[in-house]
Length: 155
Image 1 (tube, rainbow, N blue to C red):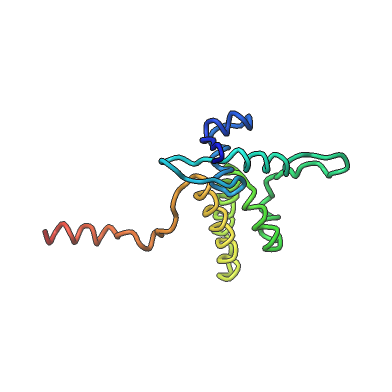
Image 2 (cartoon, helix red, strand yellow):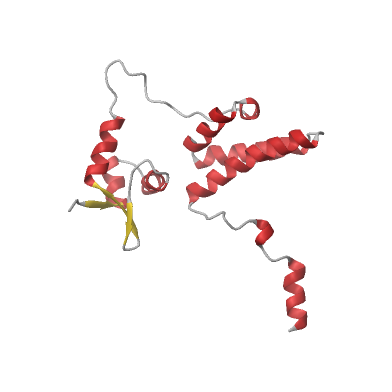
């Protein structure tokens, strides 16, 4: 049976923080199993990941994900935008969400406003995923204040 590493050991071996190691695992960059309340990565999967990450002579330099400008985020083809969102860190996603929603407030046409807000929603969904927050339950599913109040009044 293979030896498995928990997140703290994985982080130490990769020389990254524990939250970074956890994001790598939860984001699917490193295959893992969830046993005994902890994510675990096999030695073999770690070795394969490191082999794929090797920089070889003649290879282009590793891709650096820079945060896009708001203008780029609004005009980039869907595939490029999705690619960036998947690779971006929490801070960049949050920044893009805030700037997009503020920008959307000033848009006059409903169609364009919905497009911008849709892209903002995609960024914040990925942000929540990175934070380990389940977004399956939407605000529409939450009980309203009036429903809570009505329930108390009838009791």
